[in-house]
Length: 597
Image (tube, rainbow, N blue to C red; front, side, top):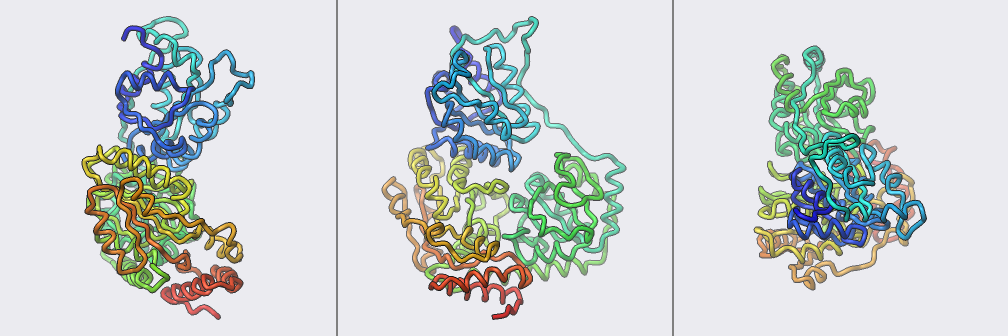
């Protein structure tokens, strides 16, 4: 193109790498790139309501598509706002490229307006690669390195673009001279499997085990069939990290559900009684819910060697792709005929499902939040995509929503940042507009950023092949997860000024935006609300008025671990506190505990 600028080169290079969407918010610091995006017409620019949610969208795009997410921001405050979403990508190992504007190079170091040392600011979150472009000739190389590094290390990277560099003439891409680095797009995907000796050592260890547990994480997403074969060969039970929940069909009789604080009693039993542990693509941090050190011999499979042995003492680490590694391991195993451990696991799974059903259908004031998610299980379309926010809704998703095979679900897991469900859901919908989306959030997360991003849903939905975009808001006027954490961890009663949320008309807000809004105030309205929302001709928000007194109870804990909850609730001289105490005793009894009064 005649008179092409560096910004035109940036946009063209993104397209060469297969980038079809850039999430961001405009500002004078990236005017050059915005002009190039307008001229080129691709990649598509998606305007978020805030740079933080733009970065969440980029991370969500990476999670739902398996490709590179890209976010774009001006300098100064815009650059600062990107950080939270980029940390989400870093902690959940997702490839994201941040393109960030900067003041012209001649004023850097002068304390100019909106001038921030962006290399230092991004030095931790984009530790694998962050560079400023000081000349036009740098740009092809910097972009290629940043994208290749993001994909190779599954982490966020950053290229900083001073305004004068953005608007400079595009360099000669065929230059061949000293000091000019010529690169090209592309990163092949290798086949990676462990050495034969390591596979043999792993097979010997697994054959020696009698009670095998398999923990799957997001790294096993492409190995679901192989994990099931491994579980069958070993007579093993399977549990999942929160990020690993969508990997396997949770309807399998030996799948115990999610592990950890928000997991199931069956997963707790599996991890506490196994003598052998196989970790496949998981970096779950809930170390106290793993087998006790010395209890179980362990094999770990991961494509990232930095994660091997990070969460549990591992006797045989296997560096390789999960599917390739398991396929190579299976012929080395001796099929076992003793199925007593598998039968024990399946019995605990049946028991947990009975517990979960009893909890979901228990009376509450006015609606039990567990039932709202329980009721979605049999209604969720088989081609849906699910996004989940952080808070009490995460517990109910983990325990009560059984995902159909093929339904992808994502959330901010390791960073655990509120306000992610709507931007994640939008990224999923824009990547696959023919598939319905269900976004699950609490009222705290909706007030943090969800109400704003609902504007983006209202702005874009008419372009979608399937208009269904269902937003569930669990409205209890409480930051419920933190309220229960205060009781459990500190023994403190609920701090009203900290935890109580202002009331907001969520369904009415949706209606004002031209969407459907449904308000659920009784248990009998829950099923109908889901049916209406999932058959609607436009996005729908379900505002379910739910009880904040339902406990966020860690599974199968001895009385000493929950005594602080009882102590804190005993000091809450409120109707809410008394109801929460009654629910806590009921749920503990459902697990077989007879706690002192």
